[in-house]
Image 1 (cartoon, rainbow, N blue to C red):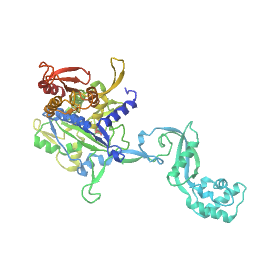
Image 2 (cartoon, protein in one colour):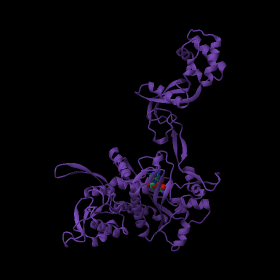
Image 3 (cartoon, rainbow, N blue to C red):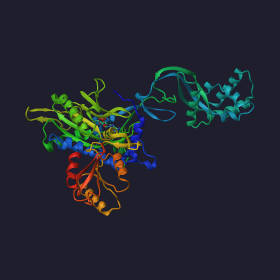
Image 4 (tube, protein in one colour):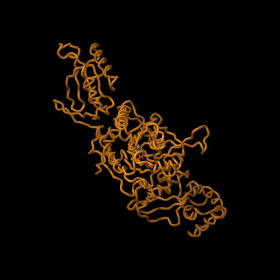
Length: 575
Ligand code: GAP
């Protein structure tokens, strides 16, 4: 199902996002901050349109849904109860050489020979020694034993042994002086390098030297382990490119920590929420009591979430700060499975309505054994991004796990009394949880197009166009006077723009040739542009007075429309 990966398309999208002010690297002038992004003037409009439409569909148009806006920082007890403090973590490994961090299960498996080292000494330590050249000293320093000597006398003994082995001689004092010089400079640290089958062995030496150099040993002479070569198969213990050793996996909690109050103590420790969902469980009772909803009903929330992702990647796809649009839909236990499928259908319809057709979304039902232990059914909705098929949203039937956990930890009654059946029970929940940033990125990827146009003279050029659904487009209509040095045209165009502004986002532009102005709006994804020309102001007679040229982004077709009809015409298409 996965399409061929097309990095150049993604690169073009990233570059367009920056060039046109959709998305910038956060803190860019200071070199950025990995995993954080800023939305520029067009990006913020796109994201706002997305969130507003989600809210409209899921909250305002339904009487079984209530909205809320919870705080980002909550009592730490919430995260203990939800299990995040204990389990919201990934097993991570670090590269001893590059210090890069990887998810242990995502490291590529390798087969080859592992070269084991136990330390190194700087070459200079054996350079200035008397009587013999450095090479001879290196030979005498029987390298393996060097790692285990614990004092100068032992080292001096070792040098003796080395000399005897090679039928050489050296003065006693010289050996002792050499041992005294060398001993403090031995850097002991186990390190190994995997050289994949078919790769030259010299790689191990180079990587080993780089490692000890990174620990401050200048021009290192490597000290090998007794068993210096070890064959391994399918190992995930080494860096995929350099072969440098990785640490053992360690769990790494993904929640950002901070402190509430002036004292940085364990008691005051708080987390930035890693999902918006928990606020909806924690406020379940208040919302039930204040709205008097009956099951089934839902709570919806849009807000920021923070995860200290190990490898933020694919532009905004995996960020450390992002927004979620989440629903917790509470129901009777017997309705859970049916409602999971109901929400799947609702969500597919939503994507279709914002310009991501059903056919572009892959429904991945998570098989038994791979779901969270409390989830009975889970669908992942995946979009075919240029970097591959990846998750946009999860729809999970989570039973009554969350409310039960909060009942257990808070001691508060988060159960439900059904008036009709006189039953008291803990409601079950279906959770459609979407990422705002991922959906915005999918909208941009889906909209991005490059079209080759050939003019009458046979000259071709490429038109870059974002074919957003008008509902999502950051700018709904561009308004231009044909010429900027004709005050009547400018005044009329400004009036058209100002009359539309209260109803939609308009872009007024009077600079450059009209064709270039259209192209600029094509790149911004503006579905419609109107141009005020001499016909509009009646210079060519009364027939077309009060009309403007309306140009369609996708077809580039133009038509005339009365200014008096323009607002309704546009509103009918952008809502
Ligand atoms: N309450 C359930 C929950 O948070 P999730 O699958 O971890 O489930 C839901 O997250 C959605 O949030 C994902 O489908 C994705 O769209 C978005 N999301 C999660 N982590 C993200 C990240 N690091 N960057 C951007 N979006 C992310």
